Image (cartoon, rainbow, N blue to C red; front, side):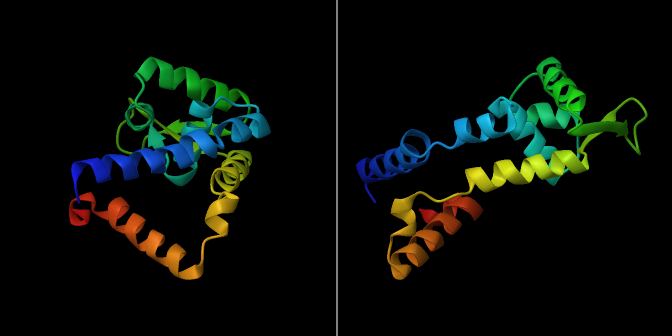
Length: 142
């Protein structure tokens, strides 16, 4: 594949997800949270994390991750508990309400746009196969 074709494909994927069917605002409005807070909540709902790990996953500094977690904790969506192997750290995990909110966000974010739903079954299978290769092993796609 030529470089131009790779760039064109990437820009089309980006446009589809981020420009034409960006569901981040919908999720933020549904939960009354900023999208970074939704990202943090979905992350700890999937895998409880230390603040440092969460900051790294969100690509933010640790003080900002603390602000995010503080807000989520005030809303009863997460809890901090002592780290089992390091008393200096806390592990952030989702509460039951947090798990439910994360599920709502995931449902909104996971809703395929009508154009994807309208693709023929064979095209969907091929698209899924290609994206599976890219997600699991970007080097294999070359």
